[in-house]
Amino acid sequence: MNITKMMTDEAVLAETGKRIARYRIDQQMTQAALAEQAGVSKRTVERVEAGASVQFSTVIRILRILHLLPGLDRRLRFLNNGHGVSSHDDGCRGQAVGADYWCGLHI
Image (tube, rainbow, N blue to C red; front, side, top):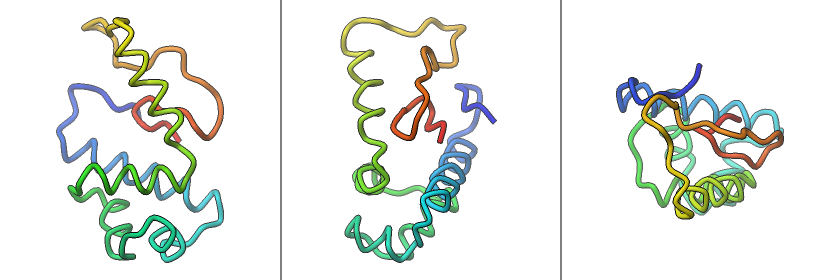
């Protein structure tokens, strides 16, 4: 499922959580290991993966451990360089291949 601007916040959180969980599992990492390395509780990882609302800093910690921050940096740099996204675009251009890209967290 693509994350679009038409989705509710709850739907975006749920989809993002599913993608984080799927990627963590693909990396053969347990929730407990991710939590310990990210400096958060296992319950927090469970909440993120279930689509609960959490602090953005918590998501950053998790993305850092999963080696997904470089993609977030590229996406934010793209926006900072004045390359806006048109109103008909879902925000995903030039999707890179690999674990570290960020476009609605396509992992």
